[in-house]
Length: 141
Image (cartoon, rainbow, N blue to C red; front, side, top):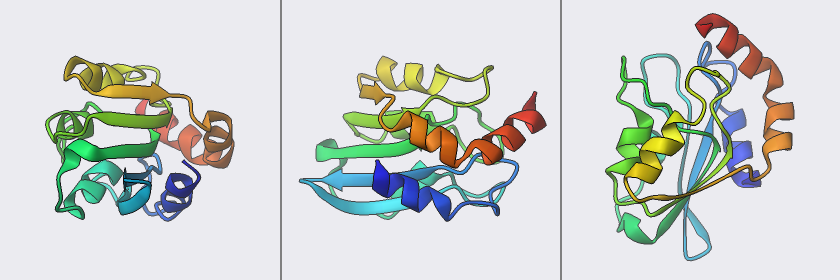
């Protein structure tokens, strides 16, 4: 998760008003792809990471700093993209900071049979991105 956090730092501030998210794909203990939130209208972190990996996703674990989004707007729902990708395990630092969506992405993943672990390194991610999350949520609420 520390590596996903480092990747996520690259998103800020260009991703505003979206939250900065870092995502890595790990296979057999090795990082095989990564991505971070792009400017509005561009791919989200997990979609970028998936696009950079060409192998079998069934043996890959996804580590991401924030729960994948469920909204479909300029980009597809990241949670749905992950759910249909063949990924079997996702480790998330924290739920979506927007209370209207918190837990929804996890629900999509679990409904698709994906094992989801939430809360890994959450205090550090919240502290690191506190300003970014506050700005992102205030734009939405």
